[in-house]
Image 1 (cartoon, rainbow, N blue to C red):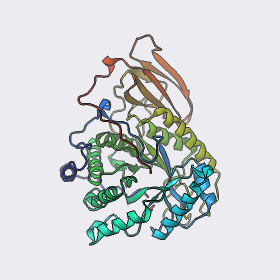
Image 2: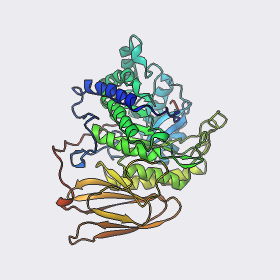
Image 3: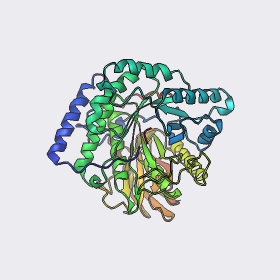
Image 4: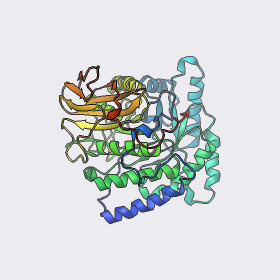
Amino acid sequence: MIEGRSPGRKAFDTGLAVVAALLAIFATTRAREATLVTAAAFVEANLDTVRAMRSPLGSNGFWIGGWVGPRADDLSPGSWRAHAEARLDVSMGPLEDRFRRADNVARLALLDSLRATEEESSLPFVFVRDDSLHPDETTRPGWEARVEGVVRAYRDAQSLAGYFLADEPQPSAAPVWAPAARLLRELDPHHPVYVNFLPIAVEDAADPNAAARWRAEVSAAVAAGELTLFTFDAYPFGPAGERPHFLATLREAARVSQATGRPFGAVLQWTGHGDLRAVTEVEALYQATQALAHGASGITWFTYVTPNPSEEPWRWRGGAIAYDGTRTARYDTLAAINARIYNLAMQRGTAAMRAAHFGGGLPDGFGGESRQSVPGVEDVRGGPATLGYTAPVEGKILYLLANRDRTQARTFTVNFTSKDPFDPRRVVTLGPGDAVVFTAKWVSRLWPPGPGTAPDPRTPNQSDKR
């Protein structure tokens, strides 16, 4: 999950070749997954035709993960109770995971036994990685039998979230890992197969061609693997201020999600490592509210437990749990942020969202529109803000307004275009990085319906490399 070194910018003609190859992969899977649409045809999904992006990890429509979780051999109930008390639903992988089946089985058995009591019903679920199933397993004979063995080992555990197959794979690797992902889904349709993708490169955040390539590559990979969900990691806070690829990748991930009909999550910076620092409370809240405004169905904090601080070159620092397993001063901070994010997520609901940016204050190098037309809204005044919005929901458009200022509270005025007899503006004061959800009456002339019919909502399933 360490953010890999970004590749240099490719020549545009090379990029087109990559896109063409990936779209060919994409096309071969359309018969298997009719709900997916081609990335080539996708520019801006019409939100009227996008189904609700419900979470595949629970019925409440939103999830929060901790990556990394308690140590691989930690069978202490207290460690997992602390994980739950921090409002973390999912452990994406344990500290110092060696992908050993015995560790995975023991961890699931412990959580199942605790979950059997009513008072422990809120304990987290866990993704597992198994040493018999690597992302390139399909290149070795007998891989189908090994996939079957993985499913037999874990699928009956109540505490299983799903199968973690690949972290930050290169676009060219999709044909290798995708067959294993499809077989896992076929053998166990109740637990998602999880892949985390690299972000748009920092130096490419202002390049629309790079954004189009990333969108095509990830859309093709999601389709090829028939993934139930996907995430990306793009850590914004280094020594020189905010890096622009966080917002750029958020925007494109939302477009991939809407094009493929698959919910997405964002892996967010929390613990310092390398030249990335441990973020402040406001910086963490800012990342989470931006993810909400762009329609993410989940977030994951990297990292919840602090890895070995002496490990070079990372020099890990500032997790919610120290390397020795004790709570740090940042534990309560993270728990409070998670409670706030849950509250906002429950108000926001599961409808797909698009986001627009107002008031400047965007990171240097952020590419694309800084302003765009928002249905029903004339403008937003008061400072740097992100406004997420849905298609009409029961006759109303739902908005999520997030303060992008991380230094001070701001009073924002949202001026609506409609002059119908309802308040033509909304005035709200938000703390640094904070957000609010509200609705406004929908006027049909402000939202021309798009072609096609919205598909029926999906029914959500239940559900280390660092």
